[in-house]
Image (cartoon, rainbow, N blue to C red; front, side, top):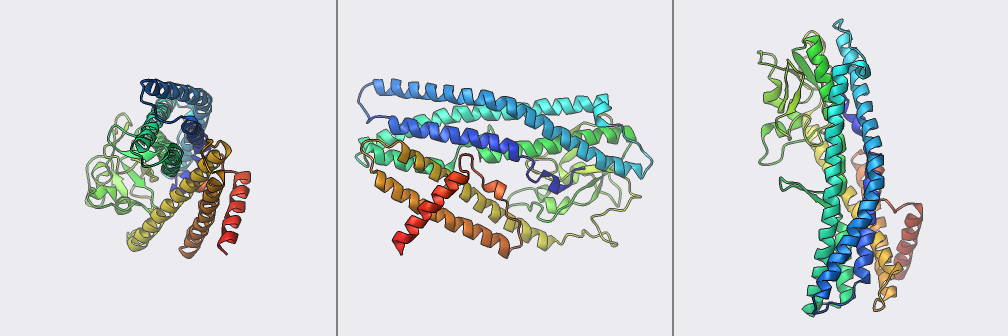
Length: 418
């Protein structure tokens, strides 16, 4: 079993790689829009747009070639560490039942499972990068088209239209569209893929030991701030309701419910194959709960002497809602930093008809707003006893020098106001 806190910051290195990709795409698109000319009435405009999209995708492809090698290495390391950490916990539990577990790196069945999960996870990340590249090309064409329409309608000059469109794009970030119709930011998509892959890989290895040990029960982990079901979702979407309990893998007893029925996760007792039957439940999307082999004779550490969960349901709900607000504030901070990066790109590579002084004033105002958002975030965390997650507000290309530059801009704006 992997404790919920195990997942904290595990995805940071991979996220940093994808943040670099996102900012590379943002800057590439910004430069291409800024260098584009006014709309013309000839077919040459369409040819030029397609050429720009091709050149942009070629540049992104080159960036991806470097990213892919690093991603493969980081992913394998993450999954192997998750497996070994989970195995240590499972071994301690089964040791109480006099069942010895072989090292996962020396167990042929476990190695096959690990390899299969690695290939599956790598495939998901590869699809993610390809989707990102294609989406970036579509975004470039769509923004060029929008700028042309604004100019043709007499709404704005080309430069003003481009600035507005780029500001909006930087604030939004790059989205990944899934076949299901779900849309996530690139960062959210990577985080989901990495956390879910670590959890499911460790779970599949645990399942192999469940079969080897002839285990009939599992214990599911628990933590404060567990997910609460939203309106319209099935009951198992509320992780707070099924966490910290013991379940029977097959069938039920008066004391123990069935694992699949309560959590949406199934374990084949013959093959050890674990299956997420409902992605809203155990081991589903972004789930940080794990399961471990169990026996009713052991003491459940998540319940009190009366068998009640030690985590108060109302405290859990409040913590979950506060964490959701914290995540929203972190998304806003990342978006604001991307806006500053993009605005600086406008300042560094202005069109002839652009007012650079006005661009700098916009930058200073946005920099000041960033300082206010940072303060609000820190105050919110302090007031609600939450740990600030500074890794979640990082943006590639917004390091020490960019922070210093933004602080200087914020001071200029504040001085002008006073």
